[in-house]
Structures are given as C-alpha cells and as structure tokens.
Length: 195
Image 1: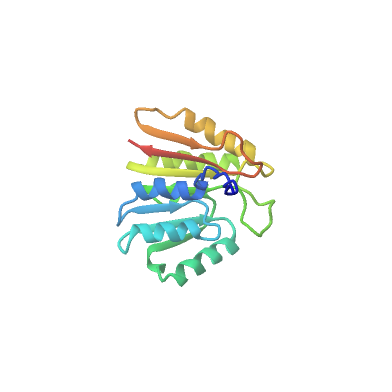
Image 2 (image 1 turned 90 degrees about the horizontal axis):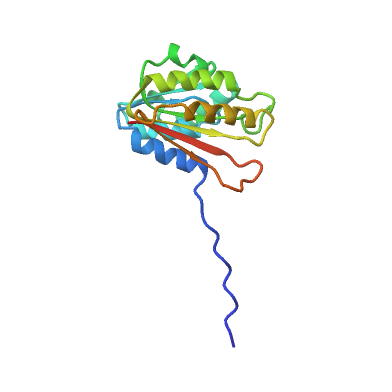
C-alpha cells in the first residue's frame, strides 16, 4: 500500500499588517515617539503604545469619532492611556500636533464595519506623508498599508508609490510588498526607513 499524497504546502506570506509591524518594531525605541496616522479600530495604536513603553508617546489621528472611541476603548482595556493622545482630525494636520517622531503607521482605506464612502484620499495622505518624511528621526520608519481594491484605493496606492519612488536612495531605504498575482482586495505595503 502507498501512503496517500501529502497536500502541497503553500508559501506562507506574512500579512501586510504583520510586515508593517516588523518594520516599525526595528525602528521604534522604547521611550520613542510614534504616530498612528489612521487610528481606525486602534490595533496599530495599541501595538505602538506597547512598543514605546512607559516613557514613550503615541499620537493617533482619525476623522471619525467612532474610530477614536473604539481605539480609546482598546487602549483603556490595556491600561495604556497615559501613553496615547487622540486627535480628532485628518492625518494631514500632523505637523500641527507632533514635531518629530521615530515611527509612523498609515493604514489607508476605510473604517471596517462603517460607511465605506468615508475613505482616505490621495491629497490628504500625500500631505501627511510629506510631513512624516520631513520630521522622521534618523533610523526612523514609516509604513503605509494601501488597499487598491476599493473605489479610490487604486488611485491612492498609485499616488503613494509615485511619491516614494522619488525619494533619494542615499537618504531612505524604501520597499514595496505585494504579490505578483494579487487578489482583488489584497493590500500593498510600502515601508521606508531613514538611513
């Protein structure tokens, strides 16, 4: 008798969100300053709050009160409120709230389980990205998870990619992670680190 054929193992590719956190984890020191440019449900905010430790700071932005309430509840449940400030404003106002930082995370698109017409947009995302690039500390990192599968998402993803292609290689390490054969709703991760 022959053993039945073993199922093929598929290549396990880490999710864009996990890969983004790995980039940030290498760049964000304990006691550092981090920005969650799109707080959403607060998952990245919580990750950043844990990384910065008791002497660090996180500033989380969102334009939707429901998003900030969800993020704040997540932070309160973890008892990390003293590390996080919430800003009810778009990420394009970043420069009015933070002067410099070690890490910035963007998770573009729309708030899960909410009005899908309220989305991040290329003009405000690029304005926030410009500020993040200028104010990023040496060895700091920025991650942008973009979702080209929703209306307006492909344009925003292309705009971010175009801007990052024009960064000076001597000053920044820039990477883009996406499958060569992506599924329709699969995100793209852009990551950069100041040298």
